[in-house]
Amino acid sequence: MIVVAAPFFLERAWIPKRPGLRAVRIRPGAPSGFEGSLGRPDLLVSTGFCGGLDPRLKTGDLILASAVYHRGRRIAVDAGILARARAALGADRIDPAVGGLVTADRVVGTVDEKAKLWKETGAIGVEMEAGSLAAWAEENRVPFLALKAVLDRADRPLPLRRAADAILHPLAAVRAGRVGFSTGRAIGRGIAALLDGFGGEG
Image 1 (cartoon, one colour):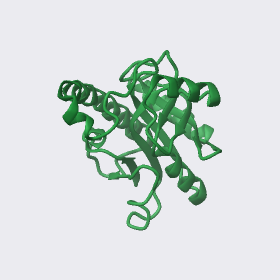
Image 2 (cartoon, rainbow, N blue to C red; image 1 turned 135 degrees about the vertical axis):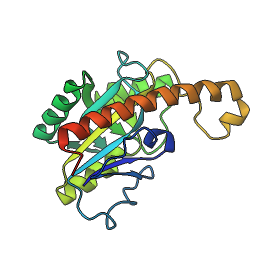
Image 3 (cartoon, rainbow, N blue to C red; image 1 turned 90 degrees about the vertical axis):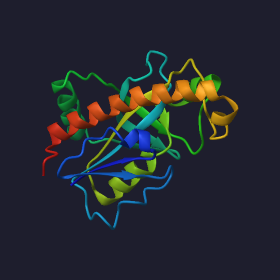
Image 4 (tube, one colour; image 1 turned 180 degrees about the horizontal axis):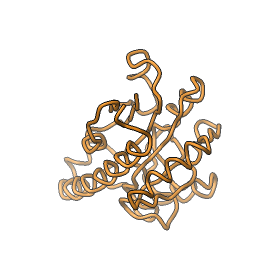
């Protein structure tokens, strides 16, 4: 069983439906929602949107994490699993940025915050879920990957940082929805390629 975890519907909507795959909703900061009910996954994949920290990354670019930084820890992704993932993505002509991913305990949405985090960690993206999943996978010896899509670039603030912002700034909400839609499609394509490479049919 391959388990793909993401927090929001728009991030999960493009994940292909196949035998041997289960997409689950994950709350930021907590891996609960799949363990116990699914047994032991053959592969756990954290996916969804992230903020870009590396200024070279554009909206819609995919990040394949080589390590996850979480609450003072650096959790490395197994080199063999990482190489297999890169090969699977490459077979579908997907060339992700490979580097560190920071899991934050709060939304990191301003340009200054992202620049500071990039300087401090050297990570290329920031999000809020992969760290707890990576820690759980390491503890339970479950193969783990994180494949994220850049929603907001390093040189631009996150347009909607709170749910109330969608009401206060309706035009920004429409634009953010369009960006989220196209970025979600990038996630779906990347996950489909991983499933092909890791035997998502069984």
